[in-house]
Length: 399
Image (cartoon, rainbow, N blue to C red; front, side, top):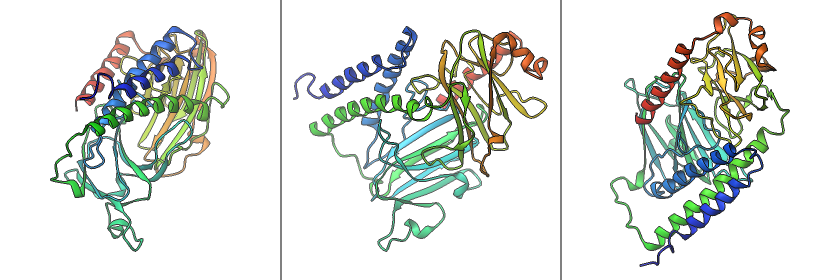
């Protein structure tokens, strides 16, 4: 048998390296920033170790790579993420039952996210591109092109070609109402159905510990770079016009920015209620992860938000409570990420579909909101909103 620490050594070394990266992160200004970094690191250790042992190229299964306790990549509070590894020369069958969520999308990626690269999106589509039975069941197949170069499955419906280099299949289930019902999904490699797993070997076991460590360091390095690439070079306290989301996601547009607010300041964000089936807004920390969206209202989608009589959604981002239903809490984060997403769109969005931003003193908020009387909320009703969020997340995680 291997000596104590021989197999786990690469992982423990990687944890120490990742901890040093977290401690040296350039955005850290307070003890809270650092402690949240360590919490983020704990989630990364959990996710990477789980992935190293739960993902098999020969016997794939969907796993959740991000969630409330292992966040990464500005995770959307309205989305459940599932992923699996694939080989570009194998065939896969994905079966499931469509839930009642507003969107279900599939994306095939080549390569991995790193601190110098965004993986290529080989194909991306939502469930409008597939046939689903009246009872909600579906079957989707992925495989390599045929020998003559023609599409996998002869181009038949529900058949999708894996491009050379394809390495990941990602599925997103998006909630526009947190009471919507989660679906089910399963993936199988066709030539391994009914075939048992290979027995573990010392070599394979060592590889998995090493793979978890490598993934952890890459995870920390990668997502520290994303704010620098896509957000922090923009003028502070502004948001971009809607644009196709980088990375090739089908029918998704986004508007992004970053904020820096004093405790006595507020940001008023005004945006039209979209005709898209999904429109969501969230705050993120400088670790490029969502803020606590269970115990605090740090995100709102178009069904959760109060819509004014003129069909505009007006949200107030601030540390201090302005006493309105669409308060977005910064929960001790004077700096952070701003993000809108529109999904399942049927047209290109224009600047007129996007947000406008104004920074004011917190005491000026009431005068700046044209429907302030209708926007106000009691403490009792606010507590009910938070309670509904907590219950919905608990139900979703157990669903």
